[in-house]
Amino acid sequence: MRERRVMMCALVLAAVFAGGCGKKKPPVARPVPPPPTETSPTGERPPAPPEPVRENPIVPAEPTISDDPLASGDLESINKNSPFQPVFYALDSSDVDAKGQQSLNADAEILKKYSTWTITIEGHCDERGTAEYNLALGERRALAAKTYLVSLGISADRLRTVSYGKEFPFDPGHDESAWSKNRRAHFVVTSK
Amino acid sequence: MTINGPPGVPPKVAVAPFIALSTDAETVAAAKTIGDVLSDDLAYEREFYMIGKDVLATIPKATSMDAIPLEQYKELNANAIVIGSVRKTGNGVAVQVRVIDVQTGKAAFGKEYSGSIANPRAYAHTASDEIFKQWVGLNGVARTKLTFSSDRDGERMKGPAGDREIKEVYIADYDGANQRRVTATHTLNITPVWAPDGKSIAYTSYRRGYQDIFVSYIYEGRMETPANGSWAKQNYLPVFSPDGTKIAFTSTRDGNPEIYVMNRDGSGIRRMTDNPAIDVTPTWAPSGNQIAWTSDRTGNPQVYVMNADGTGQRRITTSGYCDRPTWSPDPFNEIAYAMRVGAGFDIMVYSFASGESRRITDGIGSNESPAFSPNGRHIAFASTRLGKQQIFTIARDGNDLRQITREGNNGYPNWSR
Image 1 (cartoon, each protein chain N blue to C red):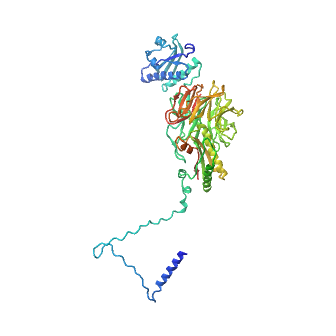
Image 2 (image 1 turned 45 degrees about the vertical axis):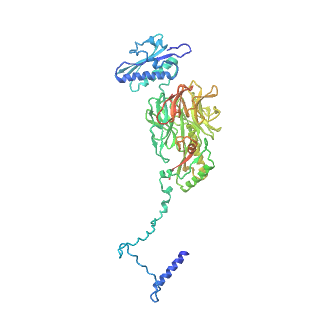
Image 3 (image 1 turned 180 degrees about the vertical axis):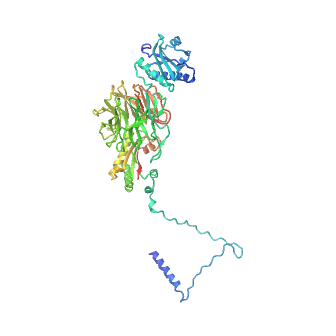
């Protein structure tokens, strides 16, 4: 509405100028040319006018097609800044707790949005388990995450699992802060 | 051959410096190596009282096998002198080894070996095994080998989850000499085990992304994948049956980690466990009639045994967290395993005779993945006691700890038969 009113005012003004020949011209303020800045008749330089506020040039918006780096990016860059939330587990456990379910719910949404993606779910363990048992425990963790995603409607064909036991810790530390990060199901996009 | 010590006391043995019968540097060096290594080999089984090198240094060096200063060895109360000579031949060396009864001055053992000079240690190992066999009726382990997994090369594998440190399979003599790599798959290779004939090694490899069992014929350069793995049928932790005709392993092919047995060529796969819990890391009894493994069906991982057809499953450990059982060779009816103690693990040995376990390692570092020597007298294991994880051997009574590896991280040891 507001724009429209301005437009109408502009039209009225234009009509006033165009049809001015027959009538007495109303007093119009004419622009005065600015004084020359380079030289002045008196030879004295007038004070410089204030610098106009510089405005940033307007940049055209990015085309929306490449707006989604997950859709356009390669696997390496996707996995480097993975959109998937890992699932973390308690010591010696492969149970997906409430927090893990929240992560998997979010992960399932991503898998639904990018319906061609296939992922590998890596099962990892902390160093407090034995190497051999951890191979099986990591597998159970990956399988538990997979089972939950399948229950949310994700096709099992899109989900592979592999266990690395305690071979590839995410945090090399030797305290609970490190261990809690290392007991996880980690998601890797393997094809798009 | 019998040379006895005083009643109730092991024979006192002096290993004299070996005589170089050729004067070139190579022969002189070989003679020294063979004498030194044979001394270590004979000490290893603790069947003899070994007279110290510093003591032996007071005796003048023999220049010929026929001119040994017997009287001086008698003064040390030595019962036997082990001595030998090395002579250069046309295309190698001839090595003589004798065990001399100090009482009679006669050779109770005498052998001549000939061959390449490339690995002088091999002569000492062969002589040691033969001396043990003839003297105390014991199968020595001087010619056996260890295999293990190592990241010492610092190689990394590229993958969608970023660079990761890889591990390759290595072998070494039982004493840690001659370490060399036998896989080059540039991925994670773990849990190697020797075939009973020593010609091949089975291991878990991620070469194809998923876990599968590879059998590498390390001296021929060929390999097999008998379990025929896939993303849906992953296989790991293989172990050969004592007769070498079967492989027991862990697989998730039916949706959960279970124990399976297959023929060596992959045929006749049979599932041994059927349980919603974890069943993992099998080991065969020396008879081949039983299998022990880890299951967490009661909560924590525990060691179980069953008949080789899957029947008669029963638990043998009673508490805590126990994993990686490894059945001792005859004559000891025992199973070693790793048990959680404090922040880490210690090696334990369960005795079927007493129904109880005893602790072998001392709580220093974390000690895992025990593997028996073929005569059951020593255990190889992985330990973090010095920082990085290294392979050690220890006598089955917890004495005589020796470090085998020193570079990188090393784990999952296994001892050849």
